[in-house]
Image (tube, rainbow, N blue to C red; front, top):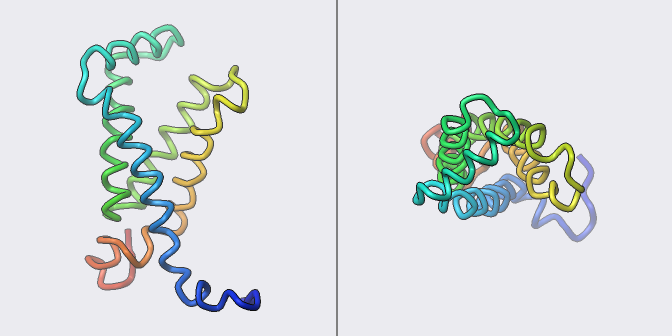
Length: 143
């Protein structure tokens, strides 16, 4: 493993880096879906959006996506069951990109792409040292 001179402090604490990804992505997921979770009117708008794109069972799909994002956002922030939550978010954002963003400009797609790639990072790297996964897993970060 090569070290960049002057960055030893950060290299020795690299296991803590995942917390920053978890916190920002978790916050964005919770903030971005709380209106759907707490407002039937907003959920109905999401259903109509999915129905217009011919998604099967649009109301079920709207609830599934919104509640999955909301719950996984909370799990990311807590650092609990991060790898399973990340797998759910990878599936969710691949579907979102395929359903809603294939015909949109990159500028409109970038948040979904960032959520996808941050979730891939967490899937491969786990929650990191500052997490409930690490604490409950006896320091091994199993989830």
